[in-house]
Amino acid sequence: MQEFIQHIINGISLGSIYALIALGYTMVYGILQLINFAHSEVYMVGAFAAYYGARLLNLTDKPGYGTLVILLVISMVICSVVGLTIERFAYRPLRKAPKLNILITAIGVSLFLQYGGQIVFGADPKVFPNVLEDSTITSFGAVELRSFDVAILGVTLFFMTAITYLIQKTKVGKAMRAVSTNHTVASLMGIDTNKIIAITFIIGSSLAGVGSVLVGMKYPKIDPLMGTLIGLKAFVAAVLGGIGNLGGAVVGGLLMGVCEEMVVGYLSSTYRDAFAFGILIVILFFRPAGLLGRVSQEKV
Image 1 (cartoon, rainbow, N blue to C red):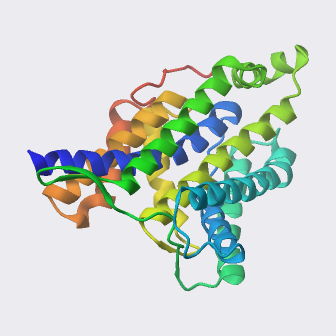
Image 2 (cartoon, rainbow, N blue to C red):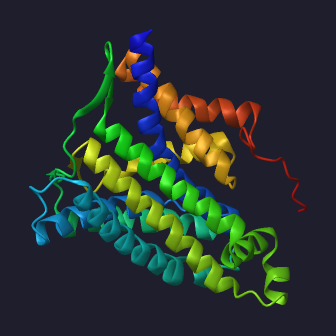
């Protein structure tokens, strides 16, 4: 039983990261009906931004919550700029083009950032700075609650609460919901749709930056291709919960993390990646709209 509880704790920690990244996918999809495959590479850029920011500010050997906050801010700012640039120069000119054109562009931007990252950052893996000391906060028999897990969960809850408040309680959030419902009607009501879409990319990219720092903190190895697998898993989490549904992205991420941890704990780590994509196949077959998604009919 204690082993099971420990796996649950580890799974929630991992699932929180998936949820943060999945929120970026689902926000962009909710506004543009677009799967932003470059989102995982924005996450990668955020990890390197934090890495070089820590070296520039001499924070590599100064673990603590202050260091964590500084690196989060650096990563969020750089990811926001990258996300905004992608939206402005890659997606906005194709706004009225067929969806297939935009999808191909998203894949092209993803590949450009991957291999551009190898040129700029080098193809060799790098060790992420020591952000926090991983210590045992409390233990119950063989079950340990560690500082990394508490920090990851705390940061995730903070940003999820902030996003929920933004979407539900602010004018920007109301405008985002309006644009998500109907671009044309929203623009007729005086909403600057380009501005709202840009804000959506900024917020989604910022969440990818937060996730990159949390991953680097817990699994301290980064490289230019690091976004590929975790990005695909976050996408699966978004589809699992219901792509376009913010609550679904959170539920999907947590379920993915817990289930993956159980597979590793009770079966084999060999199957952890296969399990993630097995979930995607099952969900698409039995419930394409996801657990919390709504089935909608599209006129053609």
